[in-house]
Length: 357
Image 1 (cartoon, rainbow, N blue to C red):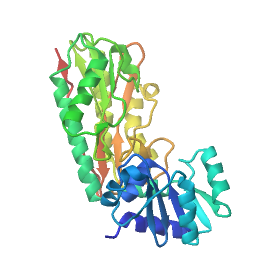
Image 2 (cartoon, helix red, strand yellow; image 1 turned 180 degrees about the vertical axis):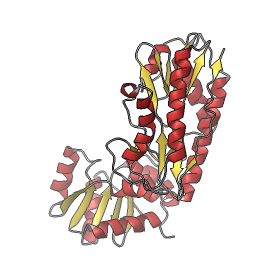
Image 3 (cartoon, rainbow, N blue to C red; image 1 turned 90 degrees about the vertical axis):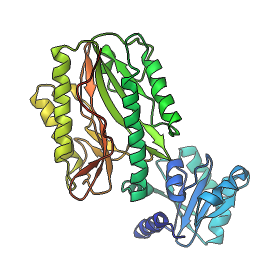
Image 4 (cartoon, helix red, strand yellow; image 1 turned 135 degrees about the vertical axis):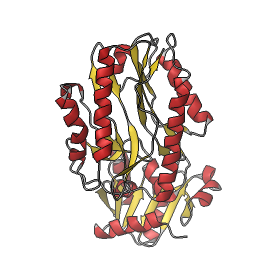
């Protein structure tokens, strides 16, 4: 069976005149090989694809890493690597500079000499930016699980419970319904804490007449979802309604106008310009969105600093927000895939102004 991801990676290596690539990132290893174990390395040459792992995975690895030659390494991984490089007459080895600490680099350099080490960055990550239909199917399932979790929480949220209690309820629900884990530390931020963009759940007790912001996602079959919804407990004030409606307007405007061919900067402006026009530009300090996949933050970014061109097959979030210290904050976030003509939403939970009395 031909591994199309390996073929594409080899094309990238050829363009850069790199003989072989040593993959140490756990996420990149899984993406390229399909191996889900906790320990292993991948070596890609122009002719061979090796998965190096230890005794614990010698039954599992051949079943998952289709098309790979599985090699059981000894106590020294580098020694096994050197043997493979010599057998393939490899004199130059690319390594993932973003995933190798300096001490490991020095060890490789000493033990693999005279093989020349070439630092590379983003080769596998660039492939991961574009999701195929199988990946999109899994990501839709992860998004649907997040949607169901939000609907479940509407029946559970109430004053008198802690943010941590609610975060635990969300994570338990996702795990019980098929998730490996949450995509990241679940955010439940209530009252004045909802003004914290990344207000991870605390011991604060949910009260009356305040926002509850929930930012969470399910890690499902190796892929993340990421959704944010904000509701009100008790009786909302005019201020609650005002900032919620502004954020919703900004988010919906972005979803309605996001297209392939835009830069990340142009996409970011779709939401940011509306929030600025309403006078809350200083209260929206993060980017409008980010790439999503096997990791919760990937390329591309919908950011004021990004010139990346959005293309079909990319999956991104759209998540504008307004955060007012001492009062509270709102963020509304959806996952979507860029298509040939626009976008297709993966998350579909209601964004109505929900009041839980």
